[in-house]
Amino acid sequence: MESLVGRRLVGLGIAVAVSILAPDLAMGQGRPTASAPASTKSTYVPPRTPDGQPDISGMYEPGWIGQPAEVPHGEPWRPKPGGPSIGPTDFGARAAAEGDTTRAQITPSRAPMVIDPPDGKVPMQPWAAAMRKEIYEKQDQAKFLDGRVRCLQAGVPRANMPVYYNSYQILQRPGYVIILYEWNHMTRIIPLDGRPHLDPRIRLPMGDSRGRWEGNTLVVEVTNFNDDTWVLGHGAIGDGQPSSSATSGHGVVHSPDLKVTERYIPMDANLIRYEATIEDPKAFTRLFTVAYDAMVRGRSDHQLFEYACHEGNRDGILMATGVDIDPSQK
Amino acid sequence: MRPPCRVLAAGFTAIVLAGLGPAVSRLSAQVPAAQSRPGAYTGPRTADGKPDLNGIWQVLSSAHWDLEPHSPEEGVPGGQGVVEGGSIPYQPWALDKKKENYAQRATADPLSKCYLPGVPRVTYVPLPFEIVQTPKYVAISYEIAHARRIIYTDGSPHVEALEFWMGDSRGKWEGDTLVVSTNNLTDKTWFDKVGNFHSTALHVVERYTPMGANHISYEATIDDPKVFTRPWKINLIIYRRLEPGLQLLDYDCVSFFWKRTLADK
Image (cartoon, rainbow over all chains, first blue to last red; front, side, top):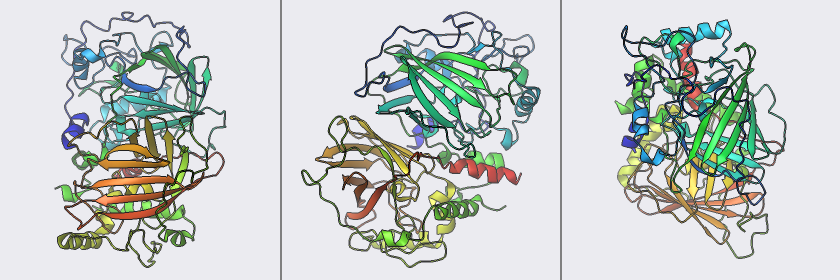
């Protein structure tokens, strides 16, 4: 399925087709998320699975792709002096998503996903902010490239950020919730039986998930990360963009001490709101929380397609590193 | 510049060997195809009455190195073969191609590039996988390359004319046997490390027949009229991993590739 993979894949070094967010980030518009405390209230009572779990199984599409992840620490980025500023960039997919009538149920929001701290900024420790700056400035070096274009797993909560190259299938069986991601065929098998986390010597890009139901909200605690992933990131770095203007979560690094507490909150039969509280004292000066409408129920005949990313990345790897992993493709 | 493939191949071999006991070659003898007789299965069942295949499983076999009978070599456990009748019925040109693959296997094995293993190879790479069984879907998550298959058991038809590394899988229950048809496969995967191969015409029919709570008889019929003179079968046993608290630990080959590659930079 070359063409489909090719369409879904975004190779290395592709010029970023940016959509213009005009006027500047209109804070506070859309869904009233600002200052909402953790644990959005929902009165919706989902049906039950045979073993009594709230039933959230099914096919889901990503929520609003154009929503900014954060408020920039500095000035908005204006590629041309005096010109319009740029919001979160997603290879032009936002425009396509806005024209997709099957996604009409998704509520547009321009509020930042970071709801705490109230200023909407990711509270990075100085070294983490410096590393983010270096990432933005050294996009010509392979080791600073987004893990996404290297076909690496996204980590958490990044895997749940609305992007056009992802959709989800949630399965439930007694004692487990399973989230299948189309993006890079990531899978999370979440046990609900209260078992302890893995030994701390075991470190994984997607961490180690332990879930429980609090009423109708699925709460998942994720630990045992390595430091290979970014916490957030749902767009791309613009050519020449300073990190102080970032609104997409790109380059928000973390330490292996990262602990994420996720809440999957069914708001109605078709919408799962998502909150994640991020704790990592080495990387952040305080806890912070992102919240947004993450998953919108898709058509019942929706299917996750294979996202064979690395398998189609020979040319990108060659360009970025000079290493040809598959000379037979010459 | 040093190609990464050799490094990856070596790393992968080390990993899989480390996970195997010395008894591996004894477990690869051919096993008869289990029949799904009514009432033969007495293990646990799901709420909808099907044999409960949920959990973590693994094949113990040298099939991953070579489907056919082969002697032990350094780094390769010997094996009595898993092909019914002993040999893969290649067309003459295809046997030549297989020999070519064999000569180049150290770098040409798609797994040495961290590519998805394909079907049925993903079943018998020597790493565990987890089955998630619901009435409409049987999802299998494999530790290797966090590969995944979603097997639709809802009566839906195959997709048409696409190519996937892991194929398009549709399943149905015949009695207590889960029968899975997989097509839409690329020609870029191999069946094992010695270069046994196929074309995009490959059609695989797998039969998962539970022998009890902890063993599944696995039969795969491999049909590819462009490469073979007739359909042929492999037979394996899939063992339930019973260690308490066991869970899959994604073997993210691609991330190891990048670490090695960037370490040279």
